[in-house]
Length: 309
View 1 (cartoon, rainbow, N blue to C red):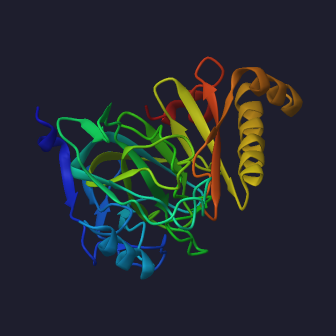
View 2 (cartoon, rainbow, N blue to C red):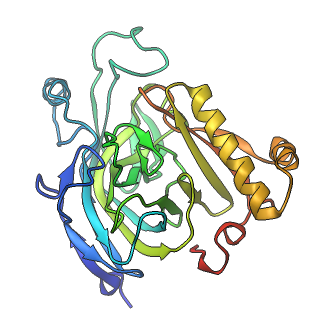
């Protein structure tokens, strides 16, 4: 059976089908059900295809960045429930874009100008200054509607600009719902991203994301990502220390409950088995996650029979 035969809905990116915040009031683009497969077109984080640094500056100066496609209303989702979004596949458009960020990056202010790059992505390869790398397509931003109106470039309990490079084809993103229908948004594809986006920007790209949806009755306190060999429990904050503290606190609580341990024992266990990873390091809101191997924590330990892999 072809992939196309699985797709129940296709969403094009346009002004009507996109937003710059995790908006609880925006009218749904589609209504979907548990089990539906959806093809979602997304625009790059700069909000349009550009050809020069001058074009990019004009877009960024207007404040247009991180457009997310959506929202998708998911039937039977109520506040307190969980939406599981499996990333079935990511197809990138022909070009990737990168540059120097003026507002973020570990070395913010050291380099002058944008140093804008538009890179042709040919046969899954990146040719950067004669250095050849494979593309590793990933989804940077995904979230459910947030009553606080979080901007897509930030992170909140319901998702947002998570920027974990582990959100690739085959992974599952679990998000806590705050409103009826959940209202799912996504965007900010990367042709390739390093942990922390240390220069402030990854290799940004437009493209299409094939997802499938599941509705789970259980509540979770924060975004959780299932990957092929680990589970990531996410945190965020004004500083990286705040983000790391939140991620570790959430991980300790979840592991203790799932494995029937005292929290102090869960904390010690994570100290010698888990990894602290950086998501978005240099933006206004930072993201971090505790990356836990499946031998310590399986997704079934959290969700039981409702688990999606």
